[in-house]
Image: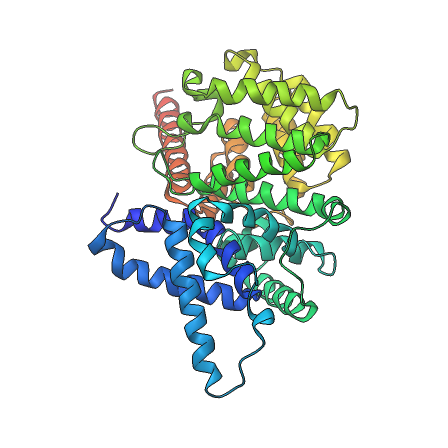
Length: 424
């Protein structure tokens, strides 16, 4: 880790808590974001000399809050200062703030912020995009990739969402039971996508995005406390635990990707797996299946297989077919193609994958899987083209390195075949 990498890690980890608290104080998304950015700039100047504070989130909240207040005072020279009740939460009196921060009271603000972003006045895509941008600090490029749209289109969505939130004057307070129930699905999706971004962006054992995964699991647990009888939230929590249980086995010592079938299953976190399996079994007993429960059931089949060859691919294929009915998506079909390849071979899987080209043309995993299937079928030239496209779309070094390894294998196989033909 470089001299400043630990600062980046601390800032990424503290962002959700700090943004939640600053928004609660200023009640304005743009002001909260500006205050947080100013605090980050000061951290980059101060922390290398003084070392990290005991609680980075609390430090950023204090500095960001003071920075925001200074900005308001500067603006007051030209415009009248708004009434105090419009500027801040009256309960956040300065003499109470330190105690509340020390008690980590501000951590509950993150879930509140997700509910604020999921205001029904916003279209669903704007709700989720706004949460990913504000809460997790994901770049517009990262969010656009999650939605499979252009950066320009996503920038417009986020801008419109912020404007609507500001115009609506949405209060930053704990929503009542009716509001929570109405917004539950959107908040669950936000948590799921936060986890996915951390999971896909991890770049090896020391990947800083692991904190996004941990935070998503924490938020999912908190959501389950609010809705203890909701099977889909049980399914979501179980799914995140099962996925994250494999974190230590996903990369080798050099940071290269290790496929699921090649992972050392002794490195899987059995405590997480045991908790998740019990949770998904409990969710299934409600007999109200949903997409998260089905995905968790798929992950559970992998977790229950002591060895890769014992994986029940037939059941996984059936579960993906169920998921296609519940939540039709080209990505779901792409994932199902992996199960089909294990059961019926690469030709049958490629027949599922090829029609997805128009919708997944900018998706790394589409080209990576397609290249792998073509490689298995001996269609080296087409496989090479697919792998080249995958490298161009890779989001981190580990993904690109894995595809380059596939290209090296392909080149070696092609050379070996040519040598055999020459001898004959």
